[in-house]
Amino acid sequence: MIKGFMKTLALGGCLAAFVAQPAAQADKLDDVIDEGVLRCGVVLDFPPIGYRDANNEPAGFDVEYCKDLAAALEVEHEILPVTWAERLPVIVTNSADVVFGGTSDSLARAKTVGFSIPYAIYYAQAVVGKETGIKTFEDMKGKRVAAAVGTVPEQEFLKIAKEWGTENLYQGYQSENEVFLAVAQGKADVGITTNTAVKPIVEKYDTIVAGPRMPWTTDYTSVVGPRKDVTWLNYLNLFVTHQVRSGRYQELWDAYVGGEAPELRIPGVLY
Image (cartoon, rainbow, N blue to C red):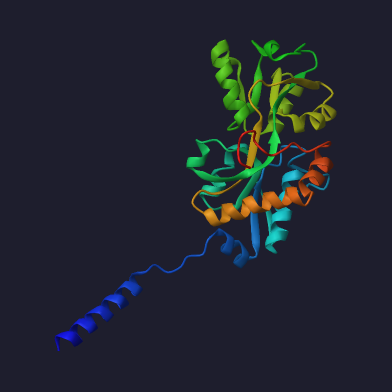
């Protein structure tokens, strides 16, 4: 009798343990495939990386990357225009599945969202008013400098402005288009952007010319996804790798920026 009771107790314990196990949960990869749509946050005031074409349709390097990722997943794509400041919130609130938006993989940001390996590399460069006479970075001291809010150029320049004692001359704008317009209209002397945006901007505004390169380091940017979804981030890493292996990365860089695409490996790092 005792033996039978112990057997029943053991069986009951196994059943209880089985019932207590949490149900398997789908991850972002499963969700996107099941829903049949990939939602991409893209900054569309960052030509030629992200912009609107003559028909007001999203276009550019990042838009094509979104389309390529959707094609690899065999789903449709949806472009969600975001500002620089909105890039992380749309992931945190699950409004977007990924963000292609020149986002640097800083340790501070990594507390909030997850990052893929680098998919594009930029360096910061200024555009300046034609009549300002600014040729070098040192010439920017004492000038009215503008950048987009929430970007690495803003963060890095403000450190320098503090050293110079010129923080009061800094102007922050919600978009790079507003930055360029401020320089074109003479409201700012300098606008900080990336090297990829300089050519189309100086072609658009006859009052703006290319300015000096900024002194901070090269900007390695990543595809952004949910911080805790390791499966999704692993898939994004593999996608970035395949873009390079297939030659698609070089093809898109040549089409939208021109020239040889930057090497994505960080010196001394294993990728």
